[in-house]
Length: 484
Image (spheres, helix red, strand yellow):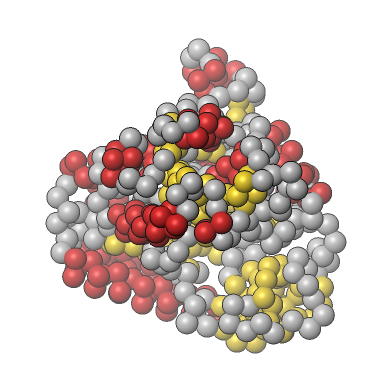
């Protein structure tokens, strides 16, 4: 049964791009973790393509191996360390191969990484990718290279990302970097720095370029997209005081959404991730107004207990979250909502756990991403709390939450039986090469017989059956949105 549940043990994604004939060196780049990491790898590959590197999917052929890392849980870090053992084995055969660690794990461990992992030649934080040419020169000169300086204004808005491993249909467009929400369990503010938004004109330029290249769907991406804001004079730091900032013309997230939707009315638009405390009604009305903005919101809640939410420093209560869910359904009928959930946060009682299960019962999420709490060094939770929920209790609670999500997912998918959905074909089904796979506006996977359609087609599919996470149907014709 297909489930939208993260598998932290899976190998990262090794990604490739079209080779430049004049490039002679080979880059193997592997990404772990969130969509932002994958987006960052596209930026890195773009920078290195100008330094003479073509990508390869063959680790043994690589001159330079980069792993873009995640620090959100200890298990994610251990997965990367195991991959470094594999790289080490290859390096014994190919001693000229250089290895670099990028991203959040690099930022968290900094120079310590060079001592712990003798194989690593280069450590590069999320805001230092433009320094890669200089760092590579240091490595080539026989020195270890480190740059983990966090920036207050770097957005990479002037870098045109290559589309790694792209199907030419979906693309990620980063609109913010960093995060100002100091959730006590989270390392992101420490590994990615303060929140900053990207110039809307550079975003529109990137979207226009993607449409010209034939892309059919984009996802506006950020740690917290709803807090996106661009002031006429630039970033917050460019203003002397709050009064001066208030006088400037501001572009909010709802403004940006409308700009993108209006620029390309047949381009499918998604966004992620939304923070409940920052989502405003104007965003919901914008989603409702434009047919090409998908009726889907990823809305992490983390816990159904107001007491635990307070300990997590989440800036919303259970009641406020449920009120927002009601408002979403009021303004955007048939909106798909998904969740992030953490079980076993320090001091979580059985009553708190039952609060989470009851909240799930009320919302009936379409799908979700569920995890056991993992203490991260340096976070407020690690400093303030003892990780006091027994591992067996965490496992049992996670099992119960996953089971609840399967029930709710089945309830949601069953509602589509007999309906016709617009589906953007993305690829062949993983389970049956004779079927196409795509998603409907609510983010649910839809599979149907291939017949005479192609990846990138918008197809109307009548749903005949389902699993708890997948809709199964038959195409009845191309959608009117098929031609951009």
